[in-house]
Structure formats: C-alpha cells, structure tokens
Image (cartoon, rainbow, N blue to C red; front, side, top):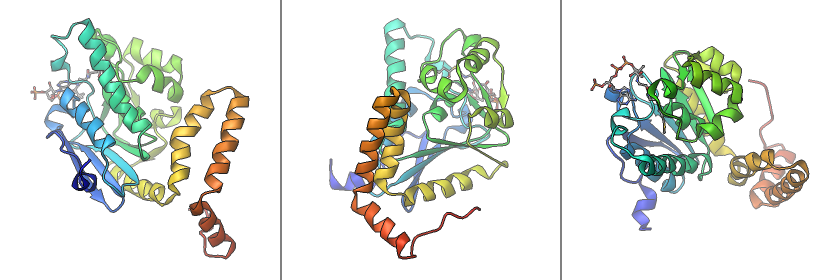
Length: 267
Ligand code: 1HE
C-alpha cells in the first residue's frame, strides 16, 4: 500500500463520512435523506474504511446523521436479486462487518432513533453500543418477507438470547432504549444529543489502553468465551503471559509501582 494512503482515510461513498480526532476515527452514516439505509456502496465503503484505517488510529466511533442511526438494508436494491445473488449479498455484509468485530481497533457505535434490521446488525458488530433515549430497535424482516443477512443470527443471540430475537422477528416487536439497555443491546444509555460525546469519551479511554490488551479483548476473549473451558483456560493463560511480557505492560506496571500510574477511582 502506498505510504500516503496509510495516513489518510480511504475513498468513501457519499453515504459515509470519516473524520479524525487525534487517535480516534469517527465514521458517520451520512445518508439521512434515506434514513441511513445501507445500500451496497455503503456496505462496501464500511468494509474499505475498517480494512484501511490510517496509521495511529486506536479506536473508532460510528454514528448516524439525521434522526436515525439506520433504517437497515436499502430495500430498493432487493427487488431484482436472485438466490445466488442473495447469498453473495449476505456474504458481503458478513465480510464487511467482520472487519468491525474482528478488525484492528475497538469500535463504539452511537445509536439514536431507528436501529432496525441491518442497522441493528451493523450496531451488533461493534464492541460497545451507546444508546440515546430516542433509540428503538426492531427486526422487521418478517413483515418484509425476508430474513436477517448481516450476521444477526450469530451476534444478536449472544446479546439478547435466541428467544428475544425470535420474538422480535416473529412479532415485529419494537424495543425502546431503556428496554434495550436492560436486555444488553446497549451498554451505555445517555440523553438525546449526548451520544457522540459519550462515544468519543469512551473511544479516547480505549485508545489509552495497551494495544495488545485491546487486541486480546477483541480477538481472544470472544473466542475463549465460546470454547470449552479447558481450552479456554489454556488460551487465557497464554494470552495473559503474552500481554504481561510486552514492554508496554512492563512500563505501565513500573509506573504504577513507582506511584506514577493512574489509580482505579470511582467516577
Ligand atoms: C428507505 C429505507 C430503507 C427509509 N430502504 N429506503 N428496513 C425497514 O423495514 C425499515 C424501513 N424504514 C422505515 O420504517 C422508516 O423509514 C423509518 C421508521 C426508519 C423512518 O421513518 P421516517 O418517517 O423518518 O422516514 P420515511 O419517510 O419512511 O423515509 C424517508 C426516505 O427514506 C424515503 O424515501 P423517499 O425517496 O420517499 O424520501 C424512504 O423510502 C427511505 N427509506 N428506509 C430504502 N430501509 C442484510 S439483511 C437486512 C435486512 C433488513 O435490514 S430488513 C429491514 C429494512
């Protein structure tokens, strides 16, 4: 890759906008006139963005412009697709969202308004979800005669369980921000208009961690959690040893022992 391209964001479609605040990148879904519906160009742009983050980016915040995070799949692109193209399309979403979940840096999704269908699938690929009070969640695929295709069958049951996802899909039930928080769809709930600031604050904290710890949390933890316990304990011990053996960990531990490190204080 050319040197310059590693320092700048890759070229994105008009439906996406990327900015930078120090070591935090902010990706906006920027198609509010279509309620940030996700067309192919946008999903490909998301994949490109996360695979080619500029050097020095340590965390990403993702949010939506306008009154909604995302209305999900762009339904206008669906009508002419045959079965084989449908599989290919779903696999494109899987590939793109895998770059979020198992990409280079942790991702914070800031949610407001509609987080529905593929919009919820996109949010579920992030590591942290901050929801504003206006947020509501739905999986209206049933009423459209389709099925989730952006990874929801894998990711959502881990967040809310199979039964809740079945209820959402079978009934078209909508959950509000408070319910979503209680059931684990979001980890932070904030007032309307406060989500982006909270997301950036969290991303800045994440960016201060040792990169190897962030790597372990993103890549080792979810795999360990799904493995059998004995393999899990082994993998954890190896990951722990690798992390603590890094020069970064040594320097941070020394800082603490010599009274320079941050204390863990409430607030
Ligand atoms: C769209 C889409 C869309 C809006 N695809 N164009 N997703 C859904 O079933 C949700 C469909 N959308 C809605 O229910 C509503 O648009 C909202 C509740 C999100 C917002 O309502 P509202 O009143 O603010 O906006 P609107 O007037 O409905 O929409 C504004 C424009 O956005 C309008 O286009 P316009 O040219 O007439 O101005 C809408 O057609 C357009 N728009 N949502 C295309 N989704 C990988 S599989 C994933 C499967 C799914 O995601 S299924 C869920 C699909």
